[in-house]
Image (tube, rainbow, N blue to C red; front, side, top):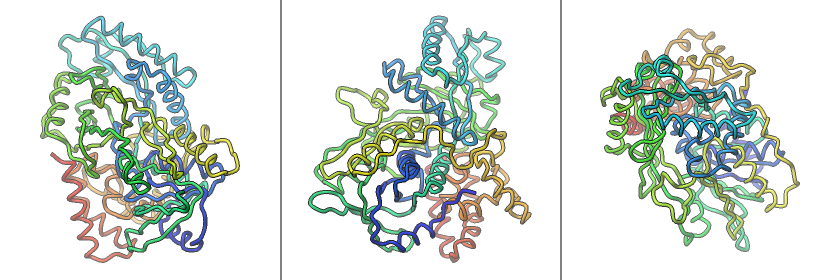
Length: 523
């Protein structure tokens, strides 16, 4: 079984206090975890430090799609689309327990749209080549209503069927972390980097704090990689406070509704809304996700809140394309994410900012990986480790992750309605816990699909240290039903306290902290 053990990671650091790591990675989102796996898989020694929890920020707040980027075809970014389609195919093969093929229906209300979007999706299929997930085709009106019975019927002419990928983003992040640890990387969450060590103007290490104990430590490194997402600029400012900003920030929100709004297995995609965004209605974990918005914002928030105009935009546009119009009362949860987009000269509006990634090497030797998208995390990591190995003079080792199975890999994934499917082979450990104690087999909450055993497994095997770690990312309870997650918080705190040796004061603090987080996820 794959295991992430924070105590073991700290013990390894203390056992070799003067060790010089080949790479120290700052940031435990998609980019940082991908780099840690890429480095360790090549045989380089790698230490990853995450200030909060793995995928705490943008990486757990996506539309849950592993997609090639249909909309980037219209922008003429063929290179990005081709890279994403190749990486999409690899990811679905390497992590079938966390990903799946997702059919999409594009409802057509004007005949010329069928020709326009149909042609674009045919190009999409051709670019995917042998890694394609299925051929696009025209649907009759009757076929559209059979596959997506809740789409707006008035004026419906036909539809287009195409295929893309879907995943559980936070679970994939954990899977990458487990895979990196299996390969030999050391990972520590809740360990913010507070400074960079330098010699003769070059970065040689980091200073970080264990948030649980307050103990400060240092780690030396041949190369340091900044993969901090939203906090890219702040991390670069630890090196040089005068550096200009790299990012353009955009917020996107998603509404979570019950399955009745999209009862079939097909997702619905509207190619262009009033603000030029793509609107998705996607089935996910027996819920329906509606998204997304694209709102420029002036500053970072670790726990962003939806803006009233964003909520109204999604409710209004969902009502335009669904027979059953959702209201505020139907929203089980709302989640907001901030996109750290690389600034682009001459681009007006964040929806037009390219989603390409950027690798920056500063004069001090600090390497920054920023931008990009979940689908291409592996290629981004490959290029970043290539750059770091060259800079640090490490032995040249080719990448071997393109066909590397990720932790928990199974030849054939189970039913995605089963919450244990995303654990893959590691689900056996959860079932063993359930068999050992009937209380652990009981539901965590009547409105949530998770057995109580997942709390214990999260602490023992997945480095969960807070109630939020468990309810927001080890499970997706906070996103499936924010009110139910809040009701489950005291039970989770008690179970974690028994595992971690915490007292009642800690439990109360954890429940209060989670309540503050949950407030941003509930209308």
